[in-house]
Each structure stands twice: as structure tokens, then as C-alpha cells.
Amino acid sequence: MLPKLRRRASDGRVRTPGPIVAAILLFGALLSCAQAASSHRRKATPQRPIVVGYFPQWQLYADDPYSVKAIDQSGGAGLLDQINYAQGFVKDGHCSVADPNADLNTIYTAANSVNGIADDSTSRFHGYFHQIEELKQKYPHLKLLISLEGRAADFAADAQPAVRKQFVRSCIDTFIRGHFAEGINVPGLFDGFDVDWESPHQEDAENFRDLLREFREQMNAVRPGLRLSIAVGPSPRMLGGVDFRSIIPYLDQVGVMNYDYAGPWMQRSGFIAPLFRDPAHPGGSIDRGMNDYIAAGVPAHMLLMGMPFYGYGWKVPEGDNHGLFQAGPGIRSEDYPYHRIRSMKGKYVLYRDRLSHAPWLYDGDTFFTFEDASSLSYKAAYAAKHSLGGVMIWELSGDTSDGELLHTVHRSLNRPPAWYTFPPDASPTGGPQQTVRTRSAEAP
Image 1 (cartoon, rainbow, N blue to C red):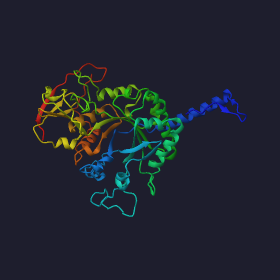
Image 2 (cartoon, helix red, strand yellow):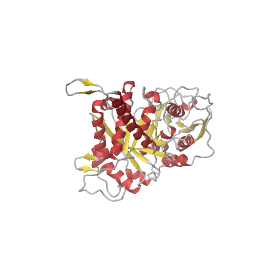
Image 3 (cartoon, rainbow, N blue to C red):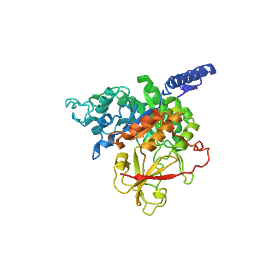
């Protein structure tokens, strides 16, 4: 923030500094901001697109608990550049460990620990945090960000000028300095923050910018090179009033949540994450969202394309068009991880949208939208062709045990298949595209 140019004298009167002093103060503040921004921009452009994966803390409580070791066993740890750990809590003016049981307390045996050694029972540091520490020791290139999540109202309150600095200090103390709990101090485990404020309103735009600036300034003071990312909706219009050009100097990444374009809250089936829009059916697309963010001032090399490793279902008992874009109630009980959809039994037939390569399953009664190796390979190649910063995966536990999707994404992002072509007029400024759907072999 710029320094105040009005100060109160000892006699209580307000004095305004002369124009020269004011100019010097203003210049100094601008120079300081410019230096911080320019020094940050020097490391902003990656040499290659990166792969970011979210780690799901809550999957400790699944019927088949997810482990950090699973990432290593699948061969995926060496393919990931960054893990965003979901989640840390934002509430009541400070950051905190969201689930001490999952993050710090669960003890791992030799069989399920990353390094094959049982946790030291005399230590107080256990849980997912300790397992990820072991993973980082095995893969030194791997960066770890804490994904800060909370209600929009809590973020808005904590971004207010009167409490902003102290709030950010609490986040730094907890996750960068590593003061996780009483007697548990592990500095250096986390390499930055992923701010998941969903989403700033028009009246929050200035405080949102200043919150990110405060994060950047305090992070630089502790350890230069710490990463700061934000998670944003599929369209910049979801962050009304935010001037993206003004926040870019403080950021390393802008992760776009390119999923949930359709879901069981809708009474009509559709694609969870369409790369391109079907002109016969209204709705957004990844291609349009990326173009909109670039037009709003986000450099392409900072954009991460979101990729869902899960899907949704609808009951469509009388669906034309093989169940796609048809009326019917969503299956609202849960989402479906890819590994579950892949192993589904029955008379499901796999169909594919030729424009987006998006798959769907339909058996005449139930419809599923999801992403598979073919569609994600195409999307990763799109990200590479359009010089995006990389991709982000929500979330890692949805993959198969051998990391089918992660391996596919990494391969296509770094070596895009030469035969892939992308519609030249598929962007928002282009004309309509014909969508062709094809039937393939019966699903497993």
C-alpha cells in the first residue's frame, strides 16, 4: 500500500508534507512495489509446462484410504512438479491445520509409509505431513503448496486492512515456519500457498489484490522463491471487479477450475469439462475460459488448466442422443472417481465427442460424464500447443493404482502427439463447429 501523505503533529493539528516530500514518499513506495514485482517476474516464466496435483486430505477416511505412498508406487511422484495439499483452514482471522488427525497424528507402519520405515512412536510428527516430507526427500524437485480454503465470508473478513497483515503472518507462521502444533515445528515443508477464495465479490476486489500483495511481501521476507497461486473459477467473470493485471505481479500461477460445467445439481446431462463448446447447446468451455483469462490480462504461461479425475451421473431412462444433453435427475449422492468409472460392469457403451474428445457412458438408463486417457491426452496437448503454464489435477486419488491418467497427462504435455489437430475456429471468436459422436466397444 502507498504511504499516507498526511500525518498528525504533536499539537494535534494535521499537517500535509510539501510536494517534494510527498513526491519522494510516493516514488519510494512505487519503486519498492516495482522492485518486488520485477524480481518476481524474472522467475515467472517456466521452462516447460508443469503438472500440479491436489492431494485430498479427506481421503484418509475413505473405505480404501488414500496414501502418499500410492503416488510413489504408481510412478506418479516423479511426474509431478508440485502438490497442492488440500487443505488448510482460513477462519477467524488466522490460518490453521484443518485436520490434525489426518495431517499430524495418524501413525504409519513400514508397509504403508513412503520410505518403508515405521513411524517413530516417540516423535509427535506423523500423518500426511510427515509422509509428504518423506516423499519430498525422495523427490527433491517436488514442491508442496498448502491450499488455503474457507468460506468466502471468512476470506473477505481476513482481507480487511485492519487485520490483513496479522492474518497473513499467521499463515506464514503455521505453514512456512512450520509451527503446526504445540511441540511440532517443521520449517520448510511447504513451499508456498494456493489461495482458494471462491470467490471475491465486486466489493472485495481491492482487498483481494492487497491480500495477495501482503502474502507476496511477507513470503519474500521469509524465503525468496516461495510460490503463490490462486484457484479461480472457469471464467474471469466469476471474480467480478478483479483487475487481473494488477494482481499478476504477485503470483506464480493461476489455477483455473475447468470442471463442473455440468453436474448432478442440474436436471440435464452434459459434459463435466468440455474443451470446446457444442454450438447446439449453450454453456461454457475450457477453450473459451482460457481465452477470456488471457484477454483479462493473465499471461498464458501462468495459467494452469484444471483436469478432473472424477465424473458425474444422471438417470436418463428415455434419452435420445445416447443420453447426452437430455433431461433427467442427477445422481446426487457422490461424484465418481475415474478408477471407479473405469471398472464399472454392465452394458454401458462408451461414446465420444469428436470435437472435444470427451467420453461418456450410457446403458439406456444411466449416463456418466468423465475424463479418460484419450480426452486428457488431447487437453494436455492443447495446453502445450497454447503455451499454457501447465495443468492442475483435481484430485490425485481419482486415478488408477498405476497412475494411468497422470502418466498420460505428463506424456502428452511434454510430447504432444503430432497428429492432434485443434479446430482453428473453436475459440470464442470463431464460427460454429459440427459435433460428431461415435460409438465404440462396450465398456468394462
